Image (cartoon, rainbow, N blue to C red; front, side, top):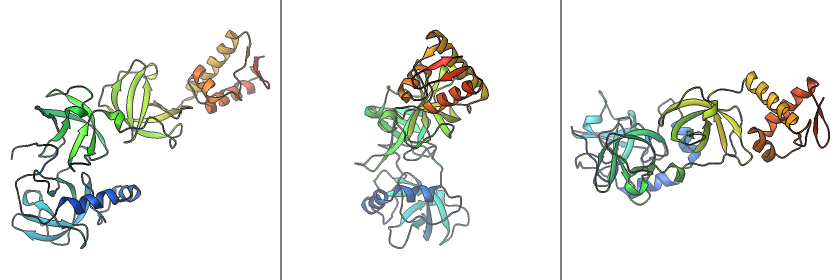
Length: 326
């Protein structure tokens, strides 16, 4: 069966079903984020309390007909069609199935057992398979393509090229769409990350200083070119670490945990700086995080540790208002 696309991820041929957009859409918007995360992060199949559009759901088979199976989250929710071509072998009533939920071309909710390359609120590196007068269409791993309106393209997309996009649920149409304007969706400042924390990264842009990366699914961070052993490419998915949480709560990233060499390098930089200041520096362990970061590009915590190591080696004296070389 050939692929098709409309104004978003759309379904196949018209097939009778009892669901309508409004009840399920209401359930989706009312669902607490904590509940969604708890349900999504389990390896065991269990019934979801509410259907989530553009996400993987675990639903119960409540009815089987020649053209497919009807699924439901509970007896209180509308039934959702899983077309016959997506039914697993030996599918029977009361089975729990893991399915992806979206709207078809007639704005009716539908299920598939196909696995998309990305879900709502996730970022992915996807290939453009078609461009027309309304926008671009990307391969998301389903029979239907993912729509990217021209207004949501950071640069004009070209057929055959790949781009990092954010998948989102359009609040007006209920359709699943994508945007390459990631700054609209990602947060630059974090109050929850800590230095040394392991994170998943996806490179989405190159700057003069380095590479901007999606941290997890929600935040932005920067990898500095000067600290990398090789060039990276847009779309690369990497395991990394939070190198520093800056005073302004922006994230600096690293592909490696801080090593003894890194700490030694910082200590040597501090010594050289004090020498350049004539043997005395006013940048002490009491200085502001902003002043420390501006000079050494490290957190106040890392700076204080380096000063402590130099003091133990009797290379510096730490006084109330300054630091001196011994």
